[in-house]
Length: 109
Image (cartoon, rainbow, N blue to C red):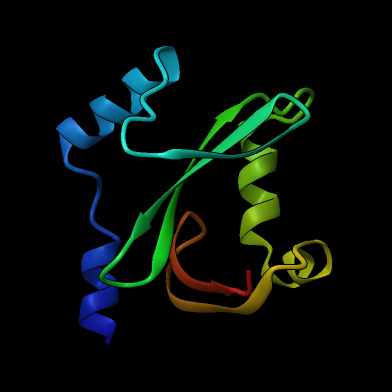
């Protein structure tokens, strides 16, 4: 499991990163269905019939929230359990330093 987690810490392939950045300029929701919208944030989802799970894309603005603050809120697992009512399990699988970690999030929907 540790080897699998270590592979997950590898950087994004260059093209995948470029594609994600381009979607900041032009949304790409091909193959995704609209799920919900709130406070200038729109969420789309795509069903995977093999796994029975959804993949999500989120577009919007969190006014007054710096990216560093958002990352801190999502990575503080104890705090996240207090505000994320969908959390079923949050567990750090591997951590390397202060800025690289793999964690498992499972939710109930």
